[in-house]
View 1 (tube, rainbow, N blue to C red):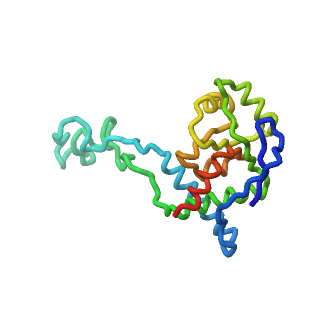
View 2 (view 1 turned 60 degrees about the horizontal axis):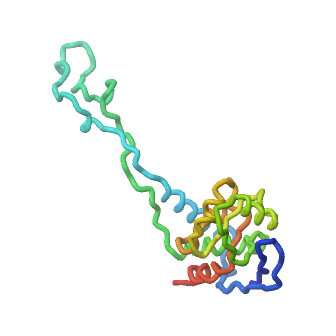
View 3 (view 1 turned 90 degrees about the vertical axis):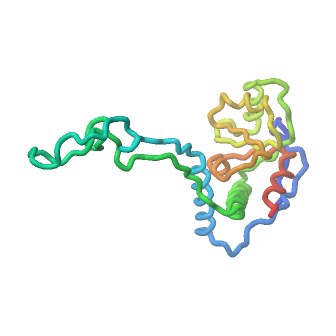
Length: 215
């Protein structure tokens, strides 16, 4: 696919880039594609969960193990020790424990999901490739000017860079709708699907192609 390249002033440079990565097999239907995206986003969100929730069970509560009352003859219900879950301050029954929420998913499915989303963005003309630019200082004003000229300031935007750009990252933190991703640290389907526009720096295309085509 051929995509035009813009400069930071929002003007067409007259140059075009050919995106060389193999798209999906045409035999895959829409329902299957949507399900693959669902699985990948579900995996990503599950991996973000900390899983450090924990409550104390009966065996972890400090207290006497002595039986409160005799088993029979009191006229009351049977009771064990003071750590009984039915008492205030007792252990919790079936409470949450520390666990990992990670879901296993094949790498191939992850890549296919990203390819589907990128393909859809290209069809909808929601991807803009921009010439590499560097902010010499941390300046939200300068970044806002660039986004305004690209007509994407008010839309949720994902900017994909080829390497970590400290000035660009800190300049974007004042914008709720803008997120910066370093392509070398990997991209994910969730951020691509969530964004209305994708801004990809021209020098990040090579890394993106290598990542998607790598087996």
